[in-house]
Image (cartoon, rainbow, N blue to C red; front, side, top):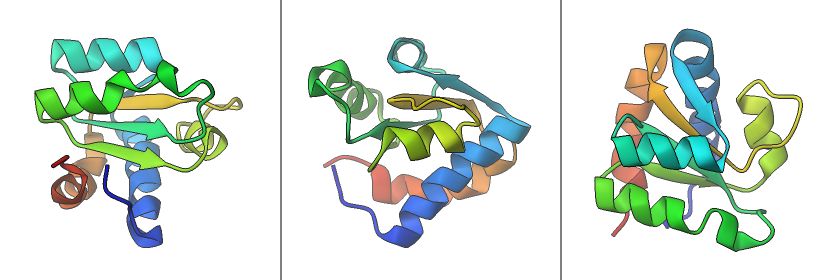
Length: 114
């Protein structure tokens, strides 16, 4: 997965925050996996600091297979905060973009896996 610049990471967090406020997100590995499998996810975000890493290893692969943008962020805490949670979360899926559609469209080319 491509390394994102600080500016792009901020945009990823912003897209999660805006989608939570104006659209719909799914939180956690199971919900994210289901959204990817059903094809309802518009973008997924996974935290790097997951232990053990096997918990989320399948998400970027599934996102690539379904051609859905997948971003990797440094910490579960920051991802949880962006999703409006008081607890860390390892992954989220944006299923309805709401007003974050333009941000996701801008990020998508940078997030496509090779």
